[in-house]
Image 1: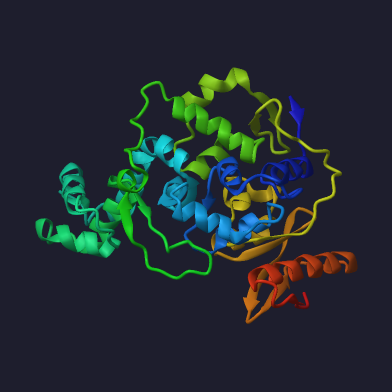
Image 2 (image 1 turned 180 degrees about the vertical axis):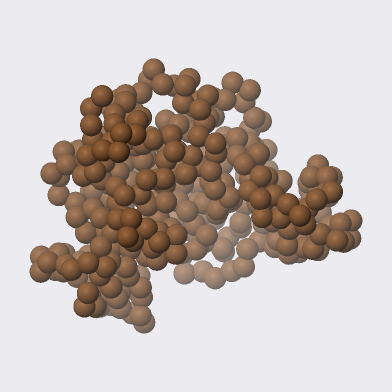
Length: 362
């Protein structure tokens, strides 16, 4: 099997994630290609798409949310993701069991003795009036039937697992502030999610969609991204359609035959990534983009800067300025490139009112 070194994997990941060269894709198509964007921080997807698309207009994403073509919902790893409406309808049933188990993993004791079918029916009955509700409002509405549980476990089980719901705008719109108000997917999108496919065509589609956006990758990477148990049957079903590589650790990596695998010497531009970006959290082995010494940044919600394709700094916003804190020494050309890209980001975030950037000493 062909060996892919760390730099080859890095350049492939950047190309798949639209970070090696900004793409001309429509926003809807970019969200679909990426398999969604992690979005528990409502404004972060805007920076993620700005770093990936040419001439990205944040109003376009807001319009897609308001127009019900993209939605915010719990899915991969039980975290909030921004996904196309088509993917939510097609994929959601495949994640049901994982979502329930993840909530139970946190609240098993509190939910002991609760019949989840009865709880789901009670929650659906409350939401049948078409009124959007917060998680706590829904939990309080059913709490009298399970008084010993407490509202938080009931609410999380209902909203994150038992009832497919979406978070309604203005949550997630550009520069908008709003609490989380939930409505069933069927009420918002006009139809129920697709039923679970006994042949697991959805699982097979997930394998190929993941590899298109993240490959070459190991099944452990697929499991980390999705939260599902590796999809072994789906991988087996599509294996003949895939090519196989090895990484420097000897792991088997799967990929689509015609997916881009750039030359490892391909230059990688500076890119500013939002908190919890796909490009890092979408892998079990994150060393293709971030050193093990800095792995904690990827789960702490730090926004990071890629220099030569690797996490080399963090960034924050102070008033109208982007502030960069390197985690390694930057060369003079690297600092110049970080300053140029950071100034462009500051302009984007301030609607052109400021291009101020400050790069702190290492």
